Image 1 (tube, helix red, strand yellow):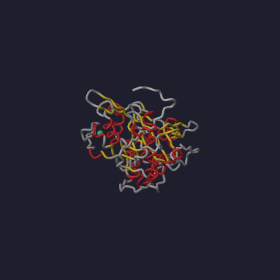
Image 2 (tube, helix red, strand yellow):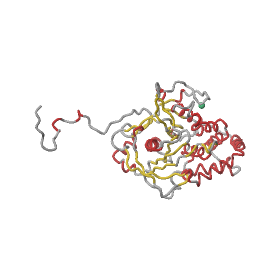
Image 3 (spheres, helix red, strand yellow):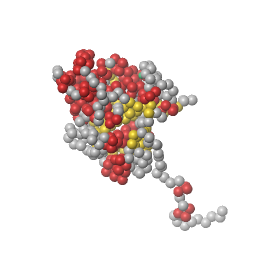
Image 4 (cartoon, protein in one colour):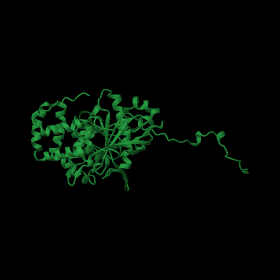
Length: 387
Ligand SMILES: [Zn+2]
């Protein structure tokens, strides 16, 4: 993956570390928690049954995926991001360490440290739940604001796109509604992905650029009042609704990544579920056929921003640089998607695309016209009626 031509001076990084100052122990505690705690654990899922390989195209909104959680072993979040977590630890603890880093690593550290030391970013998260009941009540407005003020700020290129179809419904203004008035008109694009023969559809938002793209799914609900149809944002993640789509999106994005960037070392590809109070991560590796899920993580702890969660988002969004794959996991369990999807595996491997995917849904049933008259049978003796 080509690194962007952004340069960061050592001085910038030194200044940010200085600015972090008294908050440094909070970052250290967060690192420790990501390395040990069950509050940030990840675990394996097995797919029992799903509609990703029926031979019918299924849009993300209609995905069904029954999973089983493997409860024998749970791993700390950092076990699949040891590259990033070690880099962050060394940056805080070892003087002169930052001078040994390459440009991409320096930029990524600047992104995280800027976020943690920037009052606006931290305030945005602190006020997010309250704003989701006010100016960010509409799901599209919430999506733009959180992509603009949280997710894109933690990525290398700071880029993101939001599903353009939401502009047809309720997005009337071209500015972010959180109160910042940032122009966001050009952020709406085609976010469709997949293939109309299997799982496919538009993502709420995609954060990052080229091979670094990570899908966002906003947990929301449709609400109606007298004259208007709202899509609102859930306070807590509605796990049983969003899980299905998140698994499907992780599967599609891992196969897409493999097809478009076959030389990439990391095939464990993440997707992020978001509500006003929480985030959750699903990761699928199409080479190993492995599906992982994190616990739900709160964006705040009391009134304050939860550092573990911000660092986890940073690790996930930059998984190509900070991820370490499955190498540290003692027992890797397959989820059995590939073996069950044998008949359509070639579609997943070679026909998925990003952009221009039209929604298609074929019901797995017959209509009266499909049934030839001569094939109508009586099970036993035909009754004699006079008509
Ligand atoms: Zn804003």
